[in-house]
Amino acid sequence: MITGFIGAGNLARAIVIGLLDKRVLGSDELLCASGTGATAQSLSQETGIGLASSRIDLIKRSQTIVLAFKPQHLDTITSEESAVAQNNLVISVLAGCTLESLQAAFPHARNIVRVMPNTPSRISKGVSAFCFQQPPSDEDRQFVENLLKALGTCYEVQESQMHIVTAVSGCGPAVFFQFIDHIAQAAEKRGLEHDLAATLAIETGLGSLQLMQRSNQAPSQLVDEVVSPNGVTHALLTSLADSDWSGIIDTAIEAAVNRSTELSKT
Ligand SMILES: NC(=O)c1ccc[n+]([C@@H]2O[C@H](COP(=O)([O-])OP(=O)(O)OC[C@H]3O[C@@H](n4cnc5c(N)ncnc54)[C@H](OP(=O)(O)O)[C@@H]3O)[C@@H](O)[C@H]2O)c1
Image: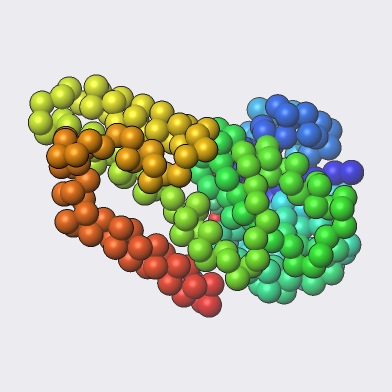
């Protein structure tokens, strides 16, 4: 059974390396093709997976197809390619491409899976959400979950929840990166060396998130453990509350959900 990647860029590379490292699939069970062929050639050379001579060659040789090019390239799938993809399982990581648009491109697929991964997938620490177009067989569900676990963790959702997922886990890494950067900049401005400021901010973020993940306490209880009445953390949190921090985050999530909804209609 061959799994073929159309698109061999950052995300395809992360999935392929994860699949090989975790021994979910062997290099002889994987194929890739790309637009110019340049990224596919280098992925094939780096990992030992097969290189298809074209997209149609890849589709003919694969039972599962992973779409890992840019969303705008979905429109370049030809009728010949969709006809050859008869009875294939199609897995798409294309941001914002709905099951309806994927089905229009691959009307004869056995089943279609829409996935929303995020950038920590590059180090196998991603979180992906996925939804099937039709109720899957146990075998297909297991296969998809194993493939996505090569990127980190995965959770099944309703397609109607994908806009919220996009706002939370898709955009989320940018929020955390920017938040840590703001903290580091504030520390540097007040006299810490640049590298030390960045390291303290990053390691505090990492340690706090791991503590939250491992603890059975609610986030609010963990906050309470850091705060003492009228103390330093209290002053910091009061300043954030005065700026309506939770309201700012709520409005930002709303903006992302709205934009994702808008984009899915274009
Ligand atoms: N990176 C992430 O963490 C992340 C997170 C969420 C969703 N995604 C989704 O994942 C997809 C891929 O993202 P990426 O970051 O891996 O992009 P990328 O690194 O830019 O790779 C894009 C790939 O598409 C290939 N390509 C270009 N035109 C093509 C065509 N006409 N037919 C077939 N392949 C073509 C490119 O090949 P050549 O350059 O060799 O032509 C390249 O291999 C995107 O749709 C994105 O929405 C990515």
